[in-house]
Image (tube, rainbow, N blue to C red):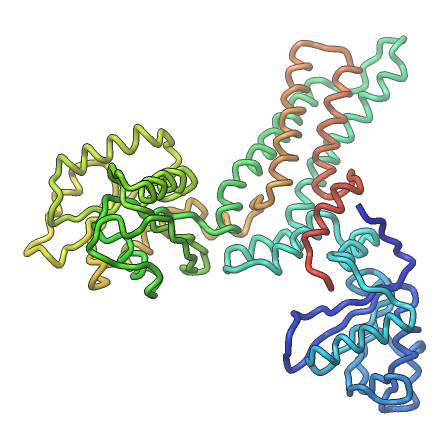
Length: 466
């Protein structure tokens, strides 16, 4: 990992590259105000940037030597009341790529250096402006592509998850200190930590950790987009249904069997929740090598999907055939967590909809005409209902970060080992090992315990300028 010298002053664009009406450039570090003062000529000549108040914006010219380069707005932030916790300056200039690059070069020539990915947020972490889970939430908020993923990231950035973890860790830390005290008086055979109280505390912590771990399935799906596989035999209308759901001609529609030979994916947001629809190759035996590969990929996508829409042509499919197909499918998948919805397509070819299909199996059946886009809203309504997360649960803490899930899993293993140790009346020195381990894994979530390698991995995924 590269070393980060916080005594250096860094600069970078804070807005996306390319031409725009305006762009924002950032300076942060001990010399940020001094460097800005060297190249900024305020319109009000009486203004001295080094003495100006924090959080004030000033109009002036950005100077390239003796010549003005651009008219800009400059905002000064005084430590510790800035994003990074350091002295910081933001320059709003015209969004010409040339102007942006020239200003950056002027700042570098004046003593700054280009920031590395995530370095502004890393400095905020080092300076106590946010903990590690909040810093990760910043990146998630920038990358959010739906209202649900935004809410999860925003709640985490506000510290809801961090405070929950800190509460658990502080409770455990109190008993860990008592256990350590016992070790100091081991020869006197005294017991400072009440094992009965510790057992009750561990039950509460194990329940809370378990609840947070279980929320990962929902949180991660909402963050990444819930994968929905559209499966069925060839020519039942899978590609037509995908196009109807997306309201776009995304997939090629043909009456020739085997047209779809690879999975086609696209994402839409329904009431703020992102769904990743996957149109798969038709399920059948095929001698075509390319189509066979596509069918194998279909099975892979089925294993990855959370929700599966099984599409069949109701005008040509009997009750027994559907029942048999479902039984075979359920045996093959063998995963009760996946939700299977039957989609009876091509009702436009029937005189009357055979609602008795619903009595066939205890699965939801929706009758549609993908070609005419009839009842498509019933599918989207069903997808939303399939979410186990209620609006109230959306306001609670949801774990959406795989690193946090792994840390919670390791902490849970240590907690279970402590519970077992208490039950078997193991010595305090053995209990203390597992207590330290649980504290370490909980602390790694918020950054109370960390290392350079972990920090490099986390902040290296950020964009430059954040």
